[in-house]
Length: 477
Image (cartoon, rainbow, N blue to C red; front, side):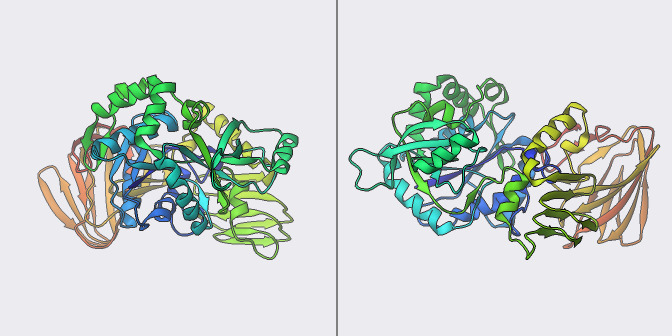
C-alpha cells in the first residue's frame, strides 16, 4: 500500500502578492480551476494501491486545507498540524511514524509530494511511480529526478549513474546531490546527460526512511517520535506536540538522509514538471496568446508582448510593455520584469522588515466559517463584508473597544446578542454594543452576506474574547 504524504507547509514568498504567509501558493488556483493542493491530491487519487493521503500543514492553514480537501471529496487519513515549520525531513518523519502506528502489521510505502508543484503529464508521472515502487519495496529510497529542458540555475541537481545489476537504465544510482549551479556549470550538467533536476518528490517505505533518519539525523527522529507520542486530536486534526516538535532540528529530506545514505536511487521523470517557484516559472506553464502574453482577469493591453498580467479586482491596462509581470490584488500591485521575478523574495524580506501586514494576509481574510473583506477604514471606523457559509457560525464573542452595526445584504442571519436570538433577512439591520456577547449563524442553504460597520477607539482583530467556538478556537484572539 502506498500512502501519499502531501507536504503543504510552504509560504511561496516569490509569488507575492498572490501568495501570502497565511494564504500560500499551494492553496491558490494558479494553473487551472483547482488549487495546487487539490491538483496534487487528485493526481494520485483513484489509482489502485494508493490510499487516502496524510497531509502535513501549518497550524494556521488547517481549516483552509480541510475545506479544500472536502471540496474535492477527499477524506485524508490524517491532517498533521505542525506548530512551527521544521522543513521536510521532520514533516516526513512524523508522517512515517503515524503511518506505522496506523498500520502496525504493514510497512507502508510513503509517496512524499510537495503540495505546490505542477505536473502536466500525469500518465508519465504514474509510469515513473510504477518504476519506483519495486525499488522502494526492495529497501531503496527513491527520488524523482526531472529530465532538464534548459540550463536552470534555480534548481538543485542530482548526478546519477546506471545502477549495478539493474536490468535497465530507468532506476539509477544517486552519485551526488549538487546545489544550485552557475549558468555555465548548469549548461555543462545538461549537456553531459548525467544530471537531473532535484524535484523534492520521494517514494520509500516508512520503516526504511526512519531507519536511515535514526542513523544520520537521530535528533530529528527522536523529536518526531516525541511529537507523535504527545500529539492530541483536535476536531479532524492531529496536533503534534508543540514542545517536542519545536525542539526538532530544521532539515530537508535531502540534507538529513538522501545525501548520506547508500540506498538513494533516482527515477528520471519527464512529465511537464514545475515547482512554480516564481512568476517567471508560472508564466512558463500557462497558455499564451498570439503575442506571447498571459492575461488573467480584466486586462486591456496595447502593444504588450511576452508578459503576465493578472487583474484580481479591477481593470489593469498596459501600453508598450514587453517581458513584464503585473500582479494586481485588492490591496497591492506588483510590477517587475520577468527576468527579475526571482527577486520578489527580496521585496518580501523588505516588507517583513518594515512589518507590513500585506505579507501575511490578503484584504479578504478566510476563516473556518467563511471570510471577511476589509472594504474601507478610517479614523475610528472600519467597514467589512462578511460571507458566512451555509450552516456555519461565528464564535460567541465580545469586544471591549468597539460597537458593530450589521446589515444583511443576502441570505438570512440568526443573530445572538446576550440573551436574545432573532433572525435578520435581506435589508434588515441590528446593533451590537461593545461588551455584548454576540454571534452570527447562517441557517440557510446559500451564503450569507453582511455589511459590518465597526466604530470605536481600537478596531484590531485582537479585541476578541471568545466564549464558544465550534472550530476549537478559544480565549482571546
